[in-house]
Image (tube, rainbow, N blue to C red):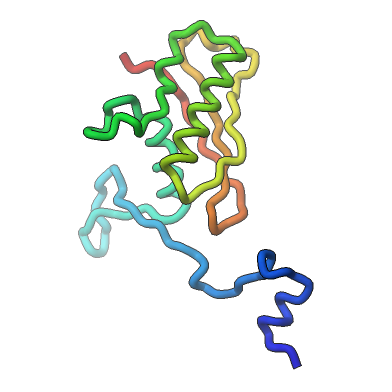
Length: 154
């Protein structure tokens, strides 16, 4: 008689086996940047799982060179391109920079796609760019989306 785990994994090779263990799911936690107190404990509220990772993705994309002391390499350098003449080549450069920074510094996700929402580039006179980043978590197959408006601050 087959065990329950063997019944679930029938027909799968070792690399495709189904893991029913609750230990496979991770819980990611971070402080809320609004620093609102928890109504029960009075501590700073926390964000967890997907919201935590979405915030990390947004922070990595919006980070400029030398924003992190002693780590100038952690930056996407996308805002540098906002005043450049915007062509399809520049759009590809923006996509590549975002994908590179996320692959290098956010190990919890797999980037599915980086899309520029205005493909006709008609709104580039505002020196802003809408970017949609689709990704999956390493332990969750559902696709998550982060929409970011890139605009020049200075």
